[in-house]
Image 1 (cartoon, rainbow, N blue to C red):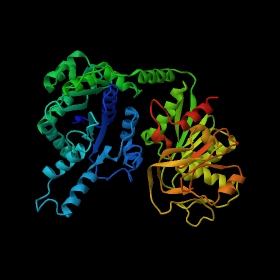
Image 2: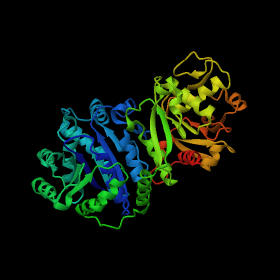
Image 3: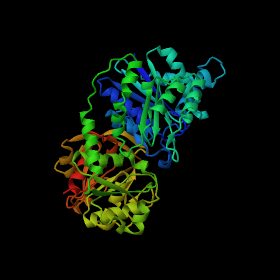
Image 4: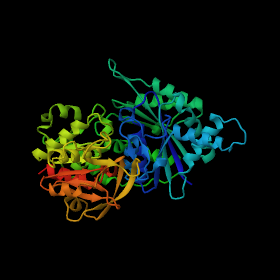
Length: 521
């Protein structure tokens, strides 16, 4: 039977529950145990399909086509493991399942209520991860204790301890411990009140993770232990850092995972953290480096840094693995449209994916700038569509070329609707064209890449593009183009798929590795 670790939040949101949960999962896995993860989000969207990146950051896609917010990406990268659509469950999914069951007459005429029906559905979903091959399941509850919408989840995980039995469930509460600047004193009362609210629900935390901008003194830790009824070794501090990669190591120094394993009656082992420590050392060296590679990420959601979380992590990691410090600047595509010279001085340009016509002309302008000035450029998703349209218009003289998404009357639909119309999402096989730059990068004939798009490159103009110097270097098994390159440029590659979803912290995706290799020359 799997054991469960539940992570809740208190005082304020945005404290890093997701990073804390991912760190716990990574540290337990480093001890040789098998781990799975799940997050319950209390909003009523069924998934992140229609969520704006301004809400919860990027939309992350799993192999099986599941869509979740950026936390799902943190889980995969910290755990170095593929997750599934079952790893991100929303209230939309939970309530929809209960209503469907009621419509099918499954409740024998009962009044359907939050307790027990919604809470039972939450537990049913949670227990689908209870498998013989999984030692520990780490479960994060979105929101903050006191939010009306996450109360059913707290009630469900309260019931879990009784059902799972003593020694099979651990509760971790992540809270904020502010400091009064004038006195330099940590104030523990917000955490005490948050824990009391949790206790009123019937949950006694085993571990409290205290987020603060400054280290906690012993007096504050003793007070929290006394008034929150938590053993002293269960008071863990998590001090603000610019380097998220350091968080698991800082928690490990306080025996974070050891306390949890002890509560779960599991053996503590020596964790294998050498690769992680090496990556953190490289990150520290990069931070202190005077020489940095400058990369522009051109997109339209630049006001929200987390809208491109997987992308920026992939670029940064690729740099670290090659001992290169990378400075990433988010550049608004609208600014590029008005003045392409804003891209002057960058060593490389990455044109990001996205949805909608706003900012699309700026991505076209960025592609033109990179192609004509031979600045290494990686174009992804909608960014790659912009690059293909720019090439069609300016090199192939296909006046009016466009995507059918934004102009259904275009004389040259170089980007066309998927047939049949659908949102293609999840992992699909991609066949690499032999002899191309892309084939040298991958070193394989067939790869699996994650997709999230409604429009494809059109194969109709493939030969015309080829005659003008653009090669479609990858296709779907049915022959639909999925990637292109311009061989005469140092690096000009576009993919309709999103390689950043497959990049990891200890082993970056080969496309990003090659991109950094080229711009570092």
